[in-house]
Amino acid sequence: MSGSLNITSATADPALLDLPWHLPLDAWPNENIAALPKGISRHLVRFAHLSGRVVAIKETTSEMAKREYEMLRTLQGLEIPCVEPLAVITNRTNDDAEPLNSVLVTRHLKFSLPYRALYSQTLRPDTATRLVDALALLLVRVHMAGLFWGDVSLSNTLFRRDAGAFAAYLVDAETGQLYPGGLSNGQRENDLEIARVNIAGELMDLEAGGRAADELDPIRVSNGIVAAYRLLWKELTGSESFSSSERWRITERVERLNDLGFDIEELAIKTDDKGTTVRIQPKVVDAGHHQRRLLRLTGLDAEENQARRLLNDLDSYRVSYGDPDADEEMLAHEWLVRVFEPVIRAIPRDLMGKLEPAEIFHQLLDHRWFMAQNQSRDIPLAEAVTSYVKDVLRHRRDEATVIEPATGEITIPIDVTDDETAALADAHESAADDEADWRLKV
Image (tube, rainbow, N blue to C red; front, side, top):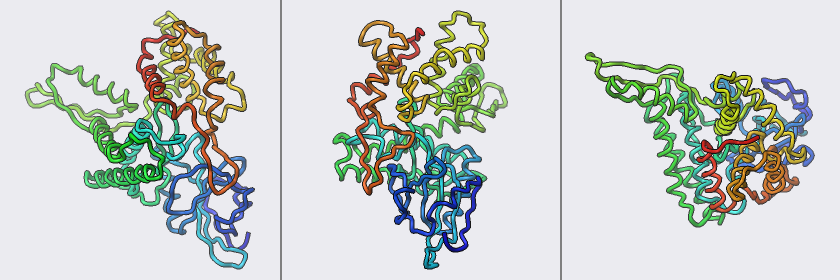
């Protein structure tokens, strides 16, 4: 290390000093580099090993690095799904005292992948639609926090599996601008149009490279983010009027928002002068309804759809208990000890990097249901675990950190369960839809 290196970091990690900051990022030795799949970026981005973890390092200007670092910290405080900023490194020089670009260091988000690494051979329409739907939800949350993103795209997003869907995380915040008073409709529509155009371009690029299925229509899929965004925005922020005799619609509105994964902190209810018409509008809506309930009952931290699925299984366990007055917290602890934890402990240690525990449990439920349908019998949990590990999990790639040999090109191994036949995907979706009628027998 040479020169007066400046490190700005919210967490003190002395190992930062051991990285070869005196070298341009593209000249770092292989011993420092973690070869992970990454998205397309206008800046050079590489992954590196740091204190037993993996971090992403982006070369940029000093001003942009500092700005993005502060923006990501602010977004974390607002509970917006995004990568965690670790440090800004400035005043870098090489051994000849020549200046080098500053860098932004962020923590690699475990079990996350760029969209180009979420399929094996070609991107299918249903996978593309799920990615776009996840990005639409992220964009709504970003806008509700008053952030104009400015560069919405699949490439600037990381995705984690979420019980058959995806959860989206903001990666690139260098163009973001926060407006404490909220965004205007024009600003939101501008961001939405940027998203539509960028997504269409990214999918057309895949199509031109033979990486998209023949039936995938980039324009239709990219237009889907507009429809998904507007529908969700209306449900979260729109007002509705109804007769005072239909007050049940207030509860219905709250339940719809809960089903979407949101909690209402405040609900504005107004009546007209005659008291015959009621008008309601959510004032503050927080994401993570099912996440918070699962965390409160079990201490498990999961994505929203994963939490919903685990809670469904927990509720099924409560029904099988046979005592409607039994304490919810007690039964949740019993379910955790007798059902969830034994399943996770049964996963071989060398396979634990394949998926998050909550995603493993969700997929196991699907697999058990599928086995029961095929064999027309109840499947014991232990038998389902053995079959799932042997026939499904063992054939997946690791997603905790998908590390390949340190070469220039990264080849993503075939993902047996994510890009399988449409029939199997449809069967799994049907399994989730029918889950309310299916009761586990542990």
